[in-house]
Length: 188
Image (cartoon, rainbow, N blue to C red; front, side):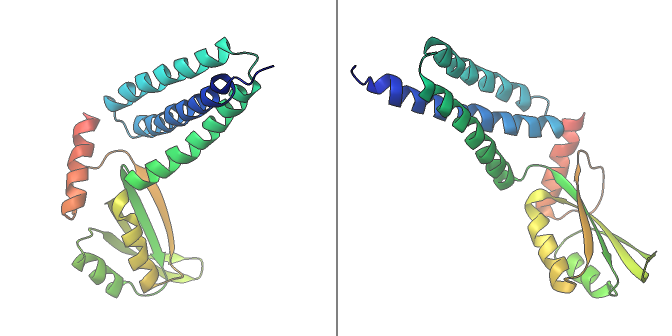
């Protein structure tokens, strides 16, 4: 029996890379759907399914090629991983950050305001006494910077991050203002 290099090596590799592409696109499509991008998500869905049909077609034409099955599954797993990394890098969307700190927050508020972050603060009572609560809305690309400032001020501060689909009004620095306007347009 002669080894068919295309059938047992190149075809499985092509299937592997096709699955990486379609699953990565699918991951991004799901994220865009959840954020309300109603025009881009269907386009990505078309490309995703088109690639998937080609990959599954090759599997069906070569049912006796077990390497195709392995590479198909490996491409799916790898595509999920790469999709999450790509989504993290492009950091689509807007998030809300809620910070609760027992430490007086005046210096943190001043620092955040100087750096162009809009926020709302209020005094509150926690289970262990008085606290300050800060509410901020930022583009996801600015989240790491914001959390870094909070942690520098108070490493023990409690905070939560929530995805936000739509924002109306508010104080935003220049990068966040562009995202806000985009968010408002897509929500109409």
